[in-house]
Image (cartoon, rainbow, N blue to C red; front, side):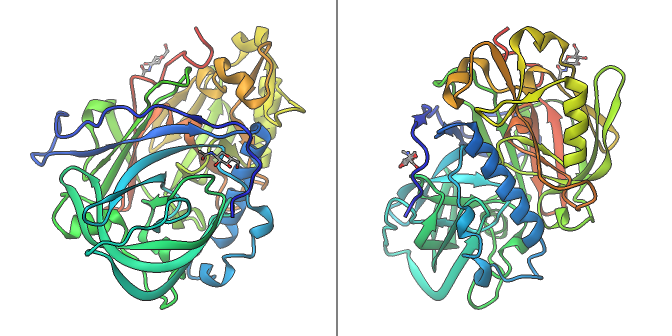
Amino acid sequence: MFSKQFSTFIFLSLFSVFVSGAPSASSQPISTLPITRRLNLSGARTLIEHDVARAQTMRTMGSPKQQSAFAAAFDASGSVLDEGTLYIATIGIGSPPTDYSVILDSGSSNTWVGAEQTYVQTSTSQTTGQQVAVDYGSGSFSGNEYLDTVTIAPGLTIQRQSIGVATQSEGLNGLDGIMGIGPTDLTSGTLSNGQLIPTVTDNAFNQGLISAQQVGILFEPINSLSDANGEVSFGQPDVSKFSGELTSVPITTTSPASDYVGIDQSITYGSSRTNILSTTAGIVDTGTTLLLLSSDAFSTYTQLTGATTDQTTGLLTLPASQFGNLESMFFNIGGVEFEFTPDAQIWPRSLNSQIGGSDDNIYIMVGDNGSPSGSGLDFTNGLAWLERFYFVYDSGNNQAGFANTPFTNSTSNSGN
Ligand SMILES: *[C@@H]1O[C@H](CO)[C@@H](O)[C@H](O)[C@H]1NC(C)=O
Ligand SMILES: *[C@@H]1O[C@H](CO)[C@@H](O)[C@H](O)[C@H]1NC(C)=O
């Protein structure tokens, strides 16, 4: 059922749940859920392959109205790849709830379980008679759709949430499923009756559990396998997790990025602000590990940094002695410049051995998305990027927001 390509598994310890304590702009208590980073790698090559397969699928299947994922679900089965590094959360389903470990995914919108642990039916479980299927490029699932009670955090128990229960799945690598927090329209074509599926955010809002259709996400960089590292808040951003102002921008109108949490941005490099990517559309995606750039932008970045492709990992690399020559990348989003430091651009050096790398090198988390600029999805700001900036997806207002965090200038990856 699952592909067996990963040899190492590292489970990073859970950290304590924070609830209701954070200072907040709204009077409503904030519901937050801890998220934990998990690595399950046989090497970085699978990490790149996973990300590129996902980007390619998103480009071709981007417009949900154009193609039924239900029909297409298994077309990409040849390219199924396990997730390399991802962020997981624990949610409860049923009454009494059974806990499931799910990937937090802003690039898809179905919530489902059953890949590993069997779905436990309780009195709140209702069959719908519908079948469901989703293809992620890097994996897929199909099964039956149920309605059930979903508990995300204390105070955030959603009634009659539509969830998928897998009878078949690939690429989940020991996890139970996915909590999709992307745009509702991405569920188009996934149900056999053709209807859209309200996301957990939609239902929490409609049931009065949260005051806005907003999800705020903080990921923290790690340099040790035991570091705690993330939080997702529902209903409002957690202002205790970012610094300065939140910059909000509309979701891009350029397809297919517009079908996801798509934004317009430009990227420059170094103190000279040399252009890497002129203003264009791409996506922010918690289901992608690297920062992916269109092929031409990637080529410019490679030339500017002098990095070369490492044969073992497939990642760009530089001798550790040249780390000091690496300069910041600057992301211009909504007229605000976000600095992505040299430290942010590299894989944590203390974990080089986990990807088959050498201690004498640094490995760069910027990859080629396999398509020239102008594709309508010219970058993916994946986890490497999101570990430096607070991210808010405001589906109610069709906006995304970004802010600096205490980790924006962290030097933990280079070990300084
Ligand atoms: C890690 O990957 C291996 C190989 O794909 C898989 O068998 C295993 O279940 C994974 N570990 C966990 C606990 O997810
Ligand atoms: C990061 O460091 C730069 C350069 O030292 C500084 O200008 C910037 O304000 C810092 N950013 C944050 C969010 O601390």
